[in-house]
Amino acid sequence: PLDAHHYIGQATPSELLFQFARNDEYVSAESGERYFALASEPKRIAWYECSHALNGRARRDRAKFLCEKLGMAPPSTDIVNLLEQAPTPTPLEEWDAHEPET
Image (cartoon, rainbow, N blue to C red; front, side):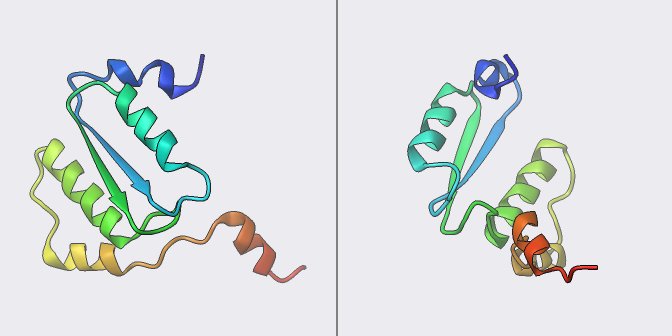
């Protein structure tokens, strides 16, 4: 009962932005498309050439979408550049493996 697929079809009137990675190691393209199909309108989908953590372009698109939906000014060029250039997050399991033992 806690799985979002039970409720995603009832999000109207909120507009949804779905962002998926073409090289996602956890969510297949088919699963992303099925989930998007379950969602109520209005909705948008965007695909990115990256892994599950998404990339700078996805961060930029998400910021622009949120500003638009919240009635805020779009992010400045400086903010957009920072979003696009920020490094992709390192999954915790990889980060923990590189930490020295204490």
